[in-house]
Amino acid sequence: MALKKLLSLLGATNTKSDKEFKHWVKVTTGFTPRNLGLYHQAFLHSSVSAMRSGTPVSNERLEFLGDAVLGAIIAEYLFKMFPYKDEGFLTQLRSRIVNGQSLRDLALKFGFNQLLKASLTKDEKTRSSAYGDAFEAFIGAIYLDMGYNTARKFVINKIIKLHLDLDELINTNLDYKSQLQIFCQKNKLSLEYKLISEERHGSNKLFVVQVIINGKSYTRFENFSKRVAEQKAAQLTLEELQKELG
Image 1: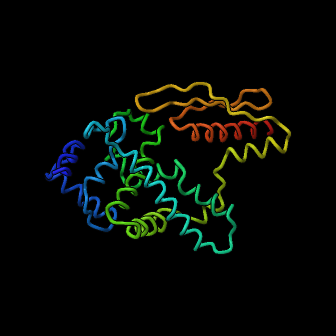
Image 2 (image 1 turned 180 degrees about the vertical axis):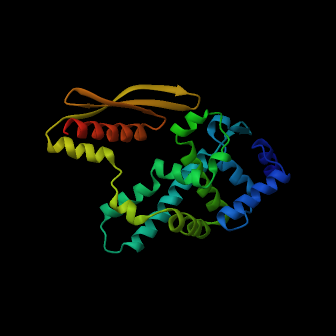
Image 3 (image 1 turned 135 degrees about the vertical axis):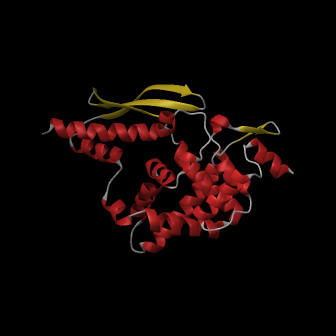
């Protein structure tokens, strides 16, 4: 009874569309879900959270869990895949796999953008971490529904082996903040990421960050993730510096 009530709150009932969603989960993961409500919840953004017994229900708790589960699975996989690499190499490679942009790209490949329930504009969804958060929440739903081993099989067989090119990730340095830091240290320049503004848009905050080098203002970038805003500002600043240096 409690499950039916929750499904109703989440906008899902035992209808044809619900059966179609169950089929989609099965095709996407390779197994038949037991608790469909968890997967519905994975796509419920906090901006449209439902209330259950006075408590808001969204995908945030599942995202928290999925983040930890995904990180553990990736860490174990890389640990076994690269037995002679040090901790620094493994940490950097894992961060490239589970960073916000990578998770967003994976969410779009899986069609999560068609399932996400959120009161955000298309632009807000694109600039926020909503898609990546839903992806992590989906991992959390699999873990709670089917256990760690099933979640591990899904991540390895459906994500790593099908959608990730480890060689390319190894040979591509996407940490633009580190690159800019190294450039400034090498040239004895001061580097600062200045938070220009922090505005609330519904349940999200829009961060505007600007790079300042030796007191000179460079690129300004905005995003619903402060970390993403800093990374993009660093990337664009590096490109600007390359043009200045010819």
